[in-house]
Image (cartoon, rainbow, N blue to C red; front, side):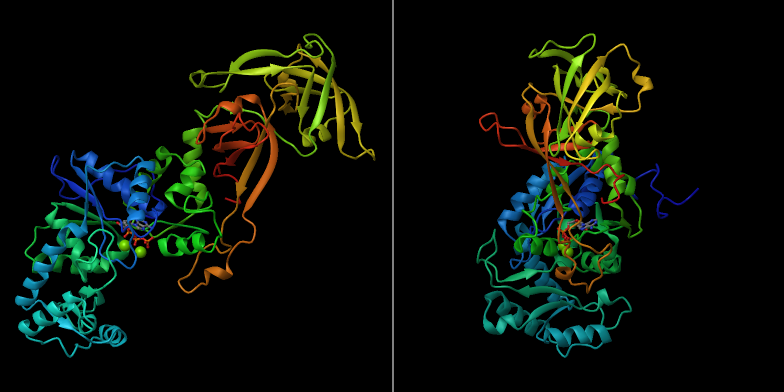
Amino acid sequence: DAPANAPGANATFELGLPNAVKGHVVTRLPPEPSGYLHIGHAKAAVLNQYFARMYDGKFLVRFDDTNPSKEKAEFEQSIIEDLALLGIKADATSYTSDYFDRLQQMAIQLVKDGKAYADDTEQELMRDQRMNGVASKRRDLSPEESLARFAEMATGSAEGKRWCLRAKMSVDDPNKALRDPVIYRVNDLPHHRTGTRYKIYPTYDFACPVVDALEGVTHALRTNEYRDRNPQYQWMLDATKSRQVEVWDFGRLAFVYTLLSKRKLKWFVEEGHVGGWDDPRFPTVRGIRRRGMTVEAITQFMLQQGPSQAFLNLEWDSIWNTNKKVIDPVAPRFVALDKEGLVRVKIVSGEGKPAPGQVESKEVLKHKKNPDVGTKTTFYADEIFVEQADAASFQQDEEVTLMDWGNAIVRKISRSGAADGPVESLEMELHLAGDFKKTKKKVTWIAAPSDVTPVTLLDYDYLITKKKLEEDDKVEELINPKTEFRTAAIADHNIRSLAAGTIIQFERKGFYIVDRAFDSSKPDQAAELILIPDGKASSI
Ligand code: ATP
Ligand code: MG
Ligand code: MG
């Protein structure tokens, strides 16, 4: 039996938490309101919710709002919306800032117990000392003096700002996370929830374990790059005499040609390299949803990744392929034709040919293999459009199949200019008695006089040109110069009634999501549809 955490072992396995008791499990997602959620956060969110449901427990969302330099109310709101876009619903929502008074009391108790001290070592020097296992000159400050400094910090004065509070864990433990980490620091920027009430803020390292315990979290899910910090997490629980919390870690998610960092994504937004946080090129929850990623696919994919500890740089193909399997059975089928070089075809003869100027209609299935998807009206006329690429491939007297109609024989090909110039128009003889199994070409077409609808088809490339970004890569040097591709097309009239967000297939083109719906008050304005990667195209 291969271990469930073997790289690539993403088949089926038992996904479970250690020491979980049905009805008593509490999990939590602690997003920092410093940006929009990305696909990495989606993994954490999906797993947390999954385990809470699996054990009939509770799932909490707690905003980790301990750093006013990075956080904003706007991001709290967007994260709530992003979670909704993921189909994630918390049983309760809270804020680390709800606990600021208690955290402060607990920090004071730590000092009194000789487990924390105030320090004014300069940042650079502190970093060096921690690196080299050297004690701070303040390490043996008396509790009274540390408390006085902490009180000074709380005023936010110039003197207070020089100090921080550190846990007295170890000077030289081989695990550097245990070398007296900072637990409180001064920040005199206003906090989006508590305003100017506090000038000191707990660090994540201190606040997270303590508040986990206060909120009754039984299982804290963390990405495994924090594994070094697990003993530190445990130390905080012990030192504050808190309840025990089980830490369960999982592999951090990463994708090729992608940045999964709120800070770096923000740079793209601010520099105007994308239209916003919901840009379809973005790995944000909004970005991928806008590009046609479904909640079902995200959930399935993340659960498949499940307990994998590997830090994988995944190909986008894998998740888009999961998505394709979700949408293929249910996406209604329609027709779009590239506008450039569009060819008008006159049906000149044949049994069943519509009378000149007459438009006939028929109800046909929107999805041939799934009648539940419903029916659509297809129009037939003696003048139709086909794409230049199809027309240019036709031979004189070739029999082809007009999809959802029947066979037709190409009787006349008119080209402009040279013999191999573009096709200008065609004439066909309808041959409905012909066998569609015997034709090589199944051609998409649209009846010319039938409310042909303007659409723009959008496709995207990666924002950056390097597959795997290294820590010291300069993103600004790796910007892909052209990442948006627009194709003008016409679509059948059924497109007119599709709302934004609808996922469809254009026959022979691929899956699309309606990004800007057709607006009947602006009939000349093209509807916009984004190509949904299907995990096959190598550009995705
Ligand atoms: P960023 O660096 O993008 O700001 P973060 O880890 O600082 O990410 P948080 O808001 O603190 O963002 O994270 C909330 C939760 O999401 C945490 O539990 C974190 O471990 C998890 N998470 C963040 N990025 C990833 C990722 N790439 N893969 C899996 N989980 C992630
Ligand atoms: Mg964080
Ligand atoms: Mg981060």
